[in-house]
Length: 91
Image (cartoon, helix red, strand yellow):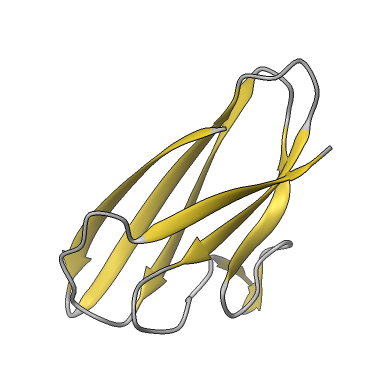
């Protein structure tokens, strides 16, 4: 699995975008972990975190030969090269 991370700071909050690419011919489960020194503020719908998010990051599936982009906020201002880590959890 390959991935790219990008950050942007807005009003004292770091916005993180992670794009995960699955080049395998089968779907893969992934764990995206926040590496910034603060809590994950996941995307929400009607005040409820979207499916797959918890206090440390996201767990979900990337389809075969596809990519998935995820975004979250963290209430810190920190300029780092790798704000998140991605781990493949297998099929």
